[in-house]
Structures are given as structure tokens and as C-alpha cells.
Length: 253
Image (cartoon, rainbow, N blue to C red; front, side, top):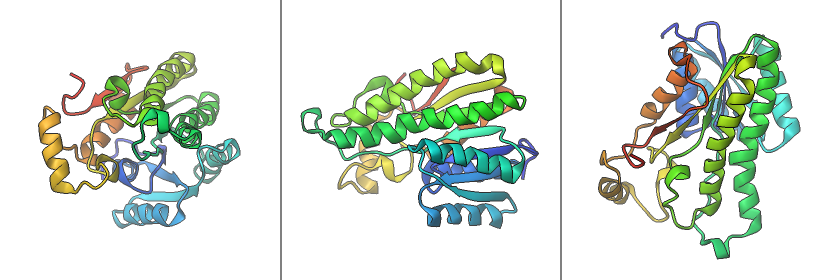
């Protein structure tokens, strides 16, 4: 355990699996009390158990980030339980099945934009409201390198949502840095999570595809993405404002 975030309360959305779970574990390992947020209670409790098994402190908050009342309650619950909120990693996201734009159902568009973009906006709105009234804080949003290059046919809703998160992060950062709230984003490339697989692909297929398309020649481990999240959340990045840190093995270089 490291004391880097000792005395801090960190909130992580989408913390039931993947990068969200890895981030929650990492914040706890570095001393933070972690609120793990998602809409699947069982997976959240698994994350809480994993943190507790390592001697960390965490609890679960069930919330749907697309619902304003859920997000407002989420922040209020964290503050009531732990006395404050200092760090937020807005990581919740969905990844739709590839569909050409002409065949894309409006309901799919609404779902993806609702979670990936509106969810981030709602989380920031309520996180910032608390942070600026209590001495400031740090927010790290989850975007994606795909928002920069768009080279993913059939993924219009996802690409649009992540490009918008990157832009929203910059505007929010400028709106609120004088309130003491420092906001940035992380844009991963292909990471070792379920989202990195294409339909029908196994691990060997994925490895061959990434070896041919990613300059570094492999998928990122979740810990490598989490390292960027933790750095942006730390005092070491105190002069970094409105930045989108791309961690994609060179794909956007």
C-alpha cells in the first residue's frame, strides 16, 4: 500500500469490471477510500471484496449514470458516507455491436451517447458542484483514442461519443479550473478487456490483429492505462489542465 492518496475519497464509475475495476483497486492500493459505482450490484461487490482482501477501503454505490437523479444521489451518498469527494474517475461506458451508419438504430445511438457522453456530463456536473464548494478536486474522464482517428467502421455512435467526451473535458476544465477543480481525460487504445475483442474473435485472433495494426505490437494491460489515470489524479500532474492523455501504443502518433 502507498500513501499517495491517503485521506482522499475517490469515486470510480464503471467499477464492476475492466479498467474501472483496475482503477478502483489502484486508488485503494495508494491509500484512497474508494466508492465503486455501477448498475450491477454483484460485480460492484466483487470489486469491493477484492479491495478489502488487499486491506483497502471501499464500498459500492448502485447508480445509472444516464439518470440525473441517480447521479445526484450517487455524489450525495459518497459525501454522506465518507465526508467528502476529492477524486472522480468517470469511466462508465458501453461498446455497441458494429453497425454501418445507414443501418444504425436511433435507440442504439441514444443508448451509447447516453452512457458515454451524457453520463460523463451528469457525473461532472454533480462532482464539480461538491468539489468547488469544498476546496476543489480532480476529475479524470475516460475517452478513447478512437475519437481521434475514427478508424473503426460500424462504430459511429461510439466514435462520436468519445470524440465528444474529449471536447467536453476541455471545456469543463476551462470552466472550472478557477474553482479549484482540475479536469483531464485518458484515451486508451486497445486494452486487455472484453471491449478489445471484435465479434467472433479469440485471444489469438486479437493478438494477430493488434500486432499488425498497433505500433507497439500488443494490447495494453489495464494496469498500464490505470497508471495514466493515477498520474493525472495525482499532485504530480498539478499543472495539467484540459489534457487528453492518449495511451494507445502509438496508433495516433
